[in-house]
Image (cartoon, one colour):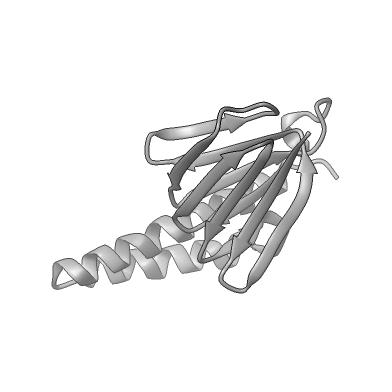
Length: 141
């Protein structure tokens, strides 16, 4: 087992021993199991997926939508530090769809690069939230 800590600006979101963690990085998604090599990486806006036990199928995984941040892996511990994280059970598909629509509208109305970058960040964040809401619908209890 590996120890996973997901920490946001408001505190610890998750602190638990798990079998596997899938993490979004700028180079793509990485899977972390026990005895993973030490690593420090950026975390991309996206989805963290957590398999709690080795015999759990994909539809039993928990999912978290995260903002970009930092990942540290050492001594069978994975620490993910981000501004915000939402668990799949905290997000409704309808709200996520509406928020994504508003973010896309902001992006289309952006008049300078700063506004465009902020709007794109919102689009990415809301798309991640929508993805975990959809994954939740297919999740086994």
